[in-house]
Image 1 (cartoon, rainbow, N blue to C red):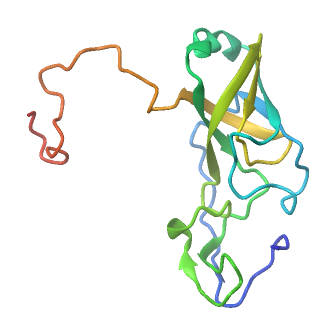
Image 2: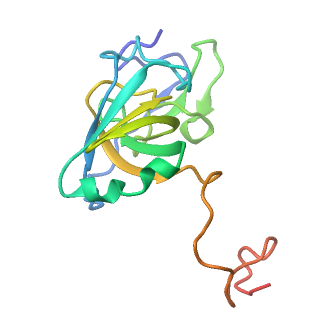
Length: 171
């Protein structure tokens, strides 16, 4: 199990550049049963415990209509994570990979994502299953799972067709 601030064999930490404000706002807090990294699951499971997402004002109104989506994508700030590792040994087994080749919480910008099953909405609170973050984690955003979301607008002239990415030309 990983100890906080541990550097395993083969791992490399760097001195991160000075922080710059990206203008992020925490819009709520997440309540889970896990108070320490060692207790937290590595990936959320939709049959896991019910967790609570509580939105702050003025963002509560943004939940309007959320009930129609059974699965949600939750984005959160992993505020207890290291931000300086560029090479990591995920299983401490001698293998080393770059941070961007892993789903480790240790990242330059520690943004976590989970696809959760919505259990209920109660005012400013969502009850969900499938999170894998610590109790008190700051909430960044909530989106309908893209697999359940149907765009409102029909295709328009200038939209990209599959295979046109990067060409700048519409299909």
